[in-house]
Length: 343
Image 1: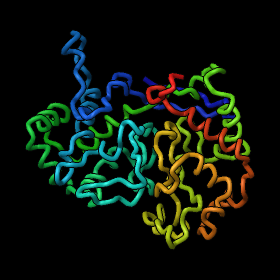
Image 2: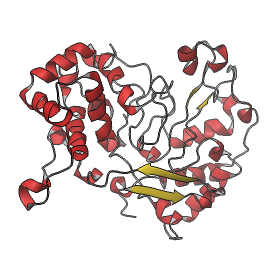
Image 3: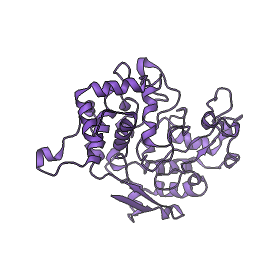
Image 4: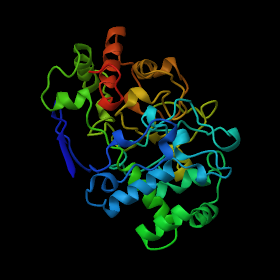
């Protein structure tokens, strides 16, 4: 199935086509401790046709995502840091890996990643499939050499049988990445108050969120980078959180080796952003309000940034009420399955 949606109400026609996997609804993904268990095959209980290969690969990826078998001491899974209840992000500035090792960057959401063209804050991976192996091998995350991960999977009766059935051979780097990516591609969300507003329900947004939407487009200039179906330009930007001292993460510059890329980080999407605090690549802001306050006057937070984008040279001049309205709009991007207010 394909979803096609116009963001005409953002003031510019932005049409995106993204592959969706309708058979694997997010509501079937458990949020409790038993999330590592595979979902039941509908054909086993209803007599429905057996799932397709694509569905089965997504289910295999789901099992792998929640299974600590891919960490060196079998204590950490992908879901340990990409927590479903936080839109598959983490609620700590940086996540804890094997042995309590702390990561170096905030864990981003993996939801709505099907249409992305680069991955990680620094863009080091070009596909979801390529992205999969990095956390497994990272010493401060899962700390397991990929060869050992594959040996474990191929020695496990369930996984060896599933990789043989679905990929025609033992688990490889390619098929492991494919399975994990197949699951992550099911994590698309398109049913928020904002989406209903886009479809013509004028009552879907509160008055504050409607005002915030206009501010997001115009005075705050957020849509320059956060546009499109998932509210990201998929570019790298330097928003001023690099000064070469206490803020010394080079970001994209560490990948390209170019000084002009120092301090650049991938522009994240904003769907479900109200659930993914803390914010920025280093998790330095605890709330969405702090994020908007930063953009309102970056120099108040970091006065000696290097290479900051010129668009942020002048304060935005947002009032306290306007900041609240922008936050209300950002909260309207939360998918209904996460919402607790019933609206």
